Length: 327
Picture 1 (tube, rainbow, N blue to C red):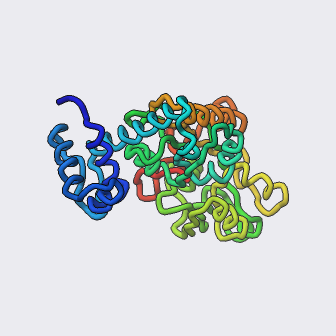
Picture 2: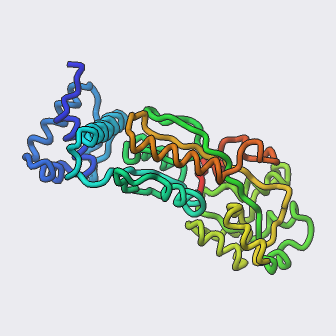
Picture 3: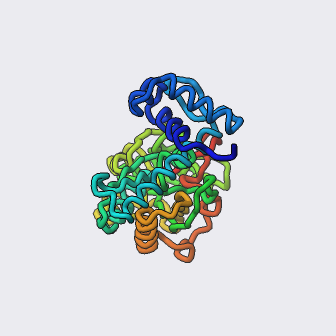
């Protein structure tokens, strides 16, 4: 009775992936009644409710454990077939990864180009904030994630990648109009650009200047893409914290100016992945770690003891005090 029947586990996964019992039945070429009976039998065997019967169906916390097990089982089966030379008809290996927008726009894509393509690997990238990357790992939708959280998701390992450095910048025309006096006095009143409503990095920077007395201004322009965020700052819509690799060319050309050159903000990044002996996943992890070591700041390279000490991307706290994710 301790065993989890594989047909029941795979049926549960099909229901979650397809969204309904009827769709899962069509995918598995069985009747909806058979799907329902398998799921009920698995719930009876585990003694837990595994699915919320909503539309679409969603796994409960216990169901997420079984779904993750099902996806890992499918990955192990595929890897075994590959090693046995039976995977030619299966196509390339698929590696789903969740990654934050700033990493995607700066160093992560070049890292993927260095992953060996023998056997071929297809990357399925999910651009999500920190809170949702961990949810995707828990649900088993991705095998790995670049995250700002050092706390491992159940069933995952964590590796520190390095520090992503951000610079407080603005267009010179914007600074001449809004930042004519003391930065701690002017910045809390100046318009700012934010990635989304939970982006707390600008607030954290202002609090560091004002000893916590105030955050960024109330006029916040939300621009939810990394390149768009940089461009919005460069066009003078507001000031913002821009990743150093994106800021440097515009600083050199004079389109941007740095507001506090001695106060960069460093956000720690981590690689979380399934505890799974998958050759393809291990290869990707090693390449990502290597490129991150070449690209990101190290702890010794961080010269300002700022929000990186809180282990939070975008300082983890939004303007309303909620847990804020990374860009």
